[in-house]
Length: 135
Image (cartoon, rainbow, N blue to C red; front, side):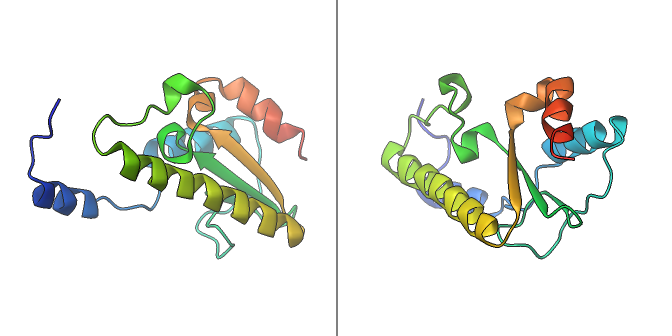
């Protein structure tokens, strides 16, 4: 299906989308943390890579990764758009490369890096079990 906007208008629309935080996924993670009495987390901390949640005392950086933007390994969760595929392939690969770089650098600094996929939030008990093993 062709885009309904001109190339210039689409660029303008996309430039207005802010890259800070996805409310739905972050709120779902907050619910999981609170329901399972997992405390000690902070948000919006000045830590490399801008983790969604930081547990400063344990030096744990928790990222909640969107399936599309971070290249979920499950094929049905990270379909490449039909339009402008070369752009999107390059963009999404850069996101994956940055995620790997950030994880590597944080580990060098003594942090434990935990990544939870957006689709995993549909199974809060599994996410809670994954997190509880860290404490």
